Length: 228
Image 1 (cartoon, one colour):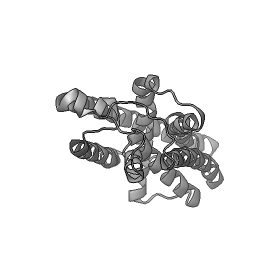
Image 2 (cartoon, one colour):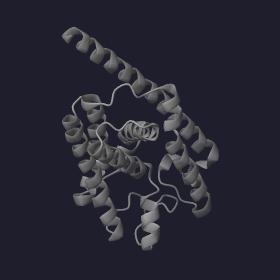
Image 3 (cartoon, rainbow, N blue to C red):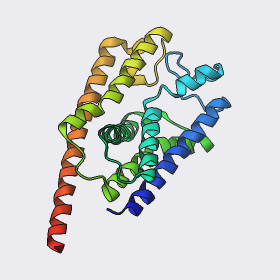
C-alpha cells in the first residue's frame, strides 16, 4: 500500500482522535463537562479541584485508548512504514483497545450517556468515530502481517496496566471510572468477574483480528501473484 494512502487514512484518524480528546480536555479544564452520574463512587463529579478533574479524565480507559490511537496514527503519518517491534506492539494495543472501547460503549454504556453540544461531539469522537476510523484505516491501508501470538500477548500490557491502576487508585479514593468496575457498589468478586469476562472477550477479539490480518495477507499475496 502506498505511503500516501497511509498518510491520508491515518491523518483523518489522528484528527478525529485529537479533536475528541481536545474538546473533552478543554471542558475538563473549564469544569463544564457534564457529570454522567451523581454517585460518589464513580469518577467525574463536578466541582472538583483542577488536578482531580485532570487525573479523573486520564483515568478512563476510553481516554487511554484514544491517546494511544492518536500517537500511533500520528506516527504513521510521520513514518508510514514504521515497523520496529515496540511500535508494532503499540499499534496492536491501539487496535485492540479502541475496538474494545467501541464495543463496550455500544453494548454496556451507550444507554447511560446523554450528552449535548460539545460534550456530545467529544463523546461521539471518543467512542464511535475514532474506533471506526482506526479500524477502517487498518483494513484499507494496512499494515499487513504484523499480528502474531507473541505480539498479542505483548499488546495486553497497556490494558492490564489500566486495570491495575484503576483498582489501586479506586482502593484509595473509593471511586471508579465505570459502573462495571465499581468495587464500592459491586464488591471485588463481581468486579474481577466482569474484568475476567472482558479480558476473555478481548482475547477472542485479538484472535479475530489475527484471522482477519492473515486473510488480508493471503488475498494481497494472491492478487500480486495474479498480476505477476
